[in-house]
Structure formats: structure tokens, C-alpha cells
Length: 208
Image (cartoon, rainbow, N blue to C red; front, side):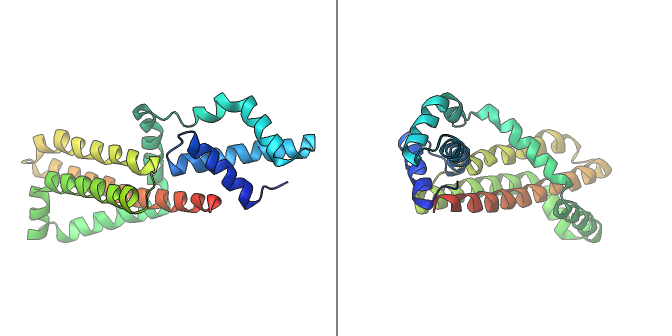
């Protein structure tokens, strides 16, 4: 027995009142609760309200453990990011970057990029953080766990660039390999963020 839209919105409202502030986490919890409630309605032949109260009371600890996200839970996000490297679009982006690198390697464009690579990483990191905050917090009035935590992945790339690239920036062969590596890391990161945002926006439709 599938829940109707009003029942889904009832669950969403309940979670919002219980301080589940992130839209994407709330959508995940709604799906979890809806599945349990639907099963109870079918097996026990009871209405939505009774099934909801019974299921939430019996599984409250498990349900709300999904909302206990910490900075340490960034590790699964990093794993997902690196798994994304195996996607066809990621492999295509990497191949394109390598081709462009060797095409423009001897041009002033490459020299200009290479000399200020750390600055560009910092600029992109700050721009992404500020713009995402303005759009989601200020305009949409919504918060997404993924959007806020994805900044950590970008900051890790930035610090890796500082710690690894700087000592070898005068050694052409090594610095060229590192430049390609960081450009690939960043390109795949952009694709990963876009992919995750699309997924969360689709998931959000469940509450509309």
C-alpha cells in the first residue's frame, strides 16, 4: 500500500519539527519511514496514523540515528567521490584533460595556470562555499548535508595541492604529472558535485 502525497508531507513535517534540518537527509528518512509504515498498514490492516505512531515509537532510535551526521562522516563521502572516478563521464573528462594538457603544454596559458594553481583552487573553494550558502540558505531557505560537506572534499584537494605540488613546482617532469593529477581530481569533483545535486533534487521531489 503506497502512501499518498499528503501522508508523505505529514512525515516530512514531523521530521522538520524534530530538527531534521537537511533536505537530503530528511528525504532519506522519509523513504525509510514510509516503507515501514506501508508494511505495517498492509500486515496489521491499520490506518496511516496508527501505523505511523506505532512504527516511529518502535524505531525512533534507529530513525533519528540517520540524522546524527558529524564531520567524521565525511569519509563515506570521500569514498563515493573516488568511486566516481570509474564512471564513464569521469574517465572521459580525464582523457580530455590529458589531451588538452599536452596540446597547450608549451603555451603561455599553461604557464599562467601552473604558476597560480594553488590560488585558483582557493578562489574556486571560496567562491563555491559563498555562492552555495547564498543560494541554498539565502534564496532557497534550505540546507543540504551534501552541499555543506562537499566543501571538505574541495578543501582537502586544496591542501593536497599546497603540500604536494609546492615542493616540486621547480621540477618540470614531476610538477607536470602533479598538475595533470590535480586537474583531473578537480574536474571529476565538479562532475561528482553536479551528479549528487541532481540526485538530491530528484529525491526532494518526494516531498513536493
